[in-house]
Amino acid sequence: MFNAIGRFFRAIKYLFTGKIDAAADALSANPTVISANYDRIIQEKKNRLNQYKDAISAMIAQEEAKKAKLTSLTEEIQKLEKLKSGAAARAKQLVDKYNGDSVAIKNDPEYAKCQAAFKDFSSTLAEKQQRANEIDEDLKQLVQNVTGHKNQIQSLMRELDKIKEEKHDAVADVLSATEEKQIADMVNGISNDKTSEELQRLRDMRQKASANARISRELAGMDSKRAESEFLEYAQKSAADDEFDALIGLSQEKKSSEPPAHDTKIPEA
Image 1 (cartoon, rainbow, N blue to C red):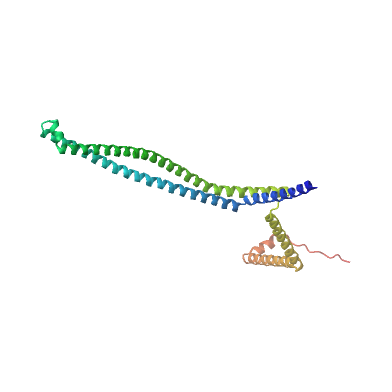
Image 2: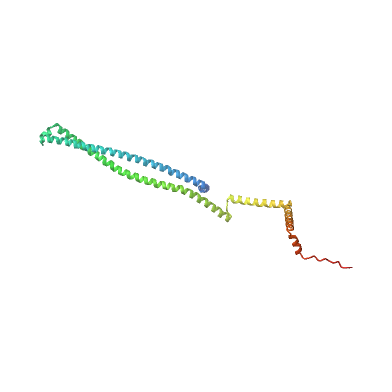
């Protein structure tokens, strides 16, 4: 018994689910709904494209910052190389001053100063060069990524334009298919198209109105009166033609061309 009740409720559930699915499918096939769904999809794609553009803009800003940092590091490296060369040149002056006497040169406080500066400039220069190389590699990868994303953006924008065009084609196709189905259903006698019924009703009303007008005309004697008017018009026209012929002498010719009339004798009693 419980199994039967369970099957009964499941059957009701499936029935309502099927009706809801059918109604949803029918609603989704409506041209207005299709157009609205396309608009929603287009707007969502626009929003994602805008987010994508913002991300690329941030990458481009990062690229510009790295370029500026690399430029600054390059200037510092050039300065350190000059300082390093300056320290070496100052130490060489000591060599000239002491005629190459290494003991005298190293005992000179200026030598220790030049040596310390040279070492400091060299180590700092090495660090700056390593950092510059890292930024240069980052820049190459970043530029490559930005270029790829730019190409992807252009591809997505072309796709968006195609979807905009597809929207109108889809709505037109659905409308055309709906009309074709209604015509086919009407031919097969299964059409539910209310416009066909309305057209047939209007045609019936038109025929009925014409019939009523014809009957009213006949009952009012309009047809006979119209015939009399036509006869009178013809008589007037004929009389006018005879008068015209008489004025120009054609009426006598007509009389002379007619055969003479024979007198009819009355037999004697």
